[in-house]
Amino acid sequence: MSKNQIYVLVGAGCLLALCAVAAMLAGIFYFTPLFGNQIVSPVSDIVSIESKARPKAESNSMGDPNAPIQMVEYGDYQCPFCERFHTETEPLLIEYFIEPGDLRFTYRSAGNWVSSNAAGNTESQDAALAAYCAADENKFWEMHDALFANNRDVENQGAFSSRRLLAIAESIGLEMTTFQDCYDSGKYADQVEKDLEDAMASGIQGTPFFVLTYQVNGETQMEYIGGAQPINVFQQTIETILQVADQ
Image (cartoon, rainbow, N blue to C red; front, side, top):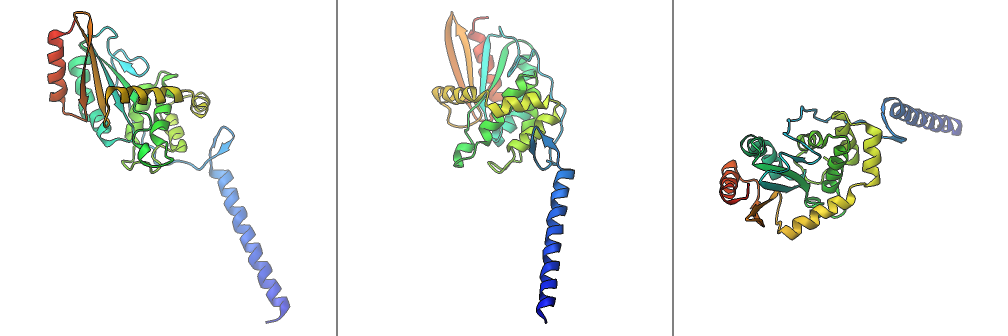
């Protein structure tokens, strides 16, 4: 083979490589949506759902603010037991105790609880930030439901990457500039850290963890429930409290 032939082959190879790169770049710019000024690849596996109605919903709380029992859940959107409580037990609590006005329920994060098992991963706290940002647009519970619906049941493997959180936010109809400004700025980072501090002070050992606060003769009392217990455990605890709590 002559030198000229070698040059021709090398040149043709380079030309083909350049064409391939150009085609790839063209595909990226043509098919990829924009979030702000960032170019990101599309997320195609987002599950769109219809959120469950919450009685007297206000930010991350639901129920009568003057209910005799105040319950706080410390949860994590990556936690499969939190998802079990969310799907199996929470609807019954709403029916039996929240709608009748006996219980006010507040969801708080447990900070970076699950992600703390993986060095450098922040998906737990990032999902919590996204939920609090959605509350700014009065869609905390819509985001709450959508996050659980889009948990891939594999912890710290990208279910709540920033790209997927943006796509989940879009799926529930948030105003994307407002949401992204809130999320990117870490507006609720202090709140998420405070959630963890309060959970630890309450004695959390795993998620979900529930703190029930009530008054007896004007004095504050507390009960604790750990784990995704069945409805009868919550029912027994709540009914016992209602017998002695100030009304």
